[in-house]
Length: 201
Image 1: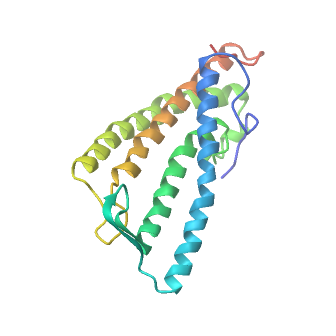
Image 2: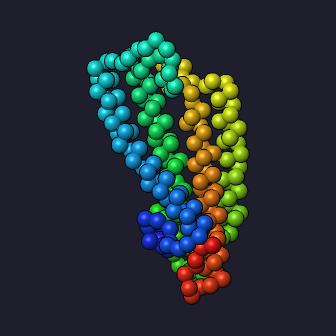
Image 3: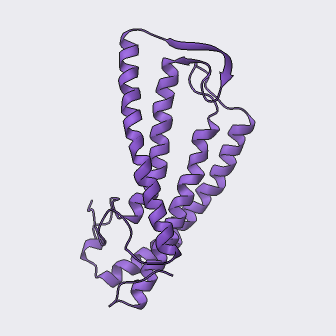
């Protein structure tokens, strides 16, 4: 596997226009979501300590609250760390795509010219990436709605209101869809003007 970088990492190319603004926003969301790793690690540490101390129920209260129900348990902490990890992953994928910090599993691409790379990117985005994202967003929305209507939650004293986690599936793939459109526009502009760097509309 080769990690191919055509543009510097850390953000999309500088330039005016809505394409640049959308891609920059996607990168910003990904960078912000990456900080979720800190509470995730804290939850893992707490889970290990409480498990060693054989603590099952941490706190109880009278009225049900969002996500936690009527008590905070060791299972709640375990669910929460996995929920946060899933949210972090879904919100950072699009930013990694925009900044080209993802791993490309294409050993042929490293031997291509810049023009060939842009052609492959456009075809891949239009015929693979965008249709896949559209399908996941469509079914992910229905998946989330059904979870909300049935009040899906834990059967073992973990977290409730699981529609919250599932809602990030269509959100994350909608971000990738927008990123795919923006990167396709950039590749098309690079193909139409191979000398000068493409500027956004």
